[in-house]
Length: 58
Image 1: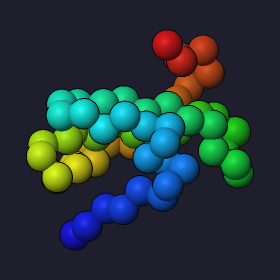
Image 2: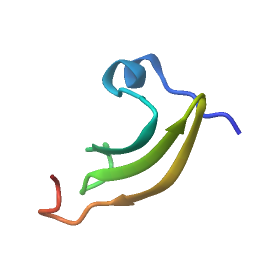
Image 3: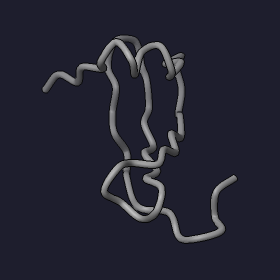
Image 4: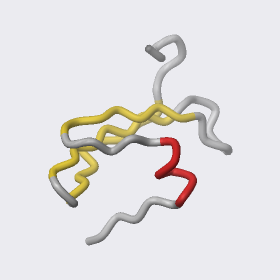
């Protein structure tokens, strides 16, 4: 499986090696979406994703 990022996503997300948490407000969802990914070389693994509960944004 290959994951591709749009040009916009690449400009706004630094994908250095290691584990990352991405928190974004997504149209159509009341709460922000949290995505946890791990980057190793050219492999990106989505570990988990879920809607954040109110008041839990860092």
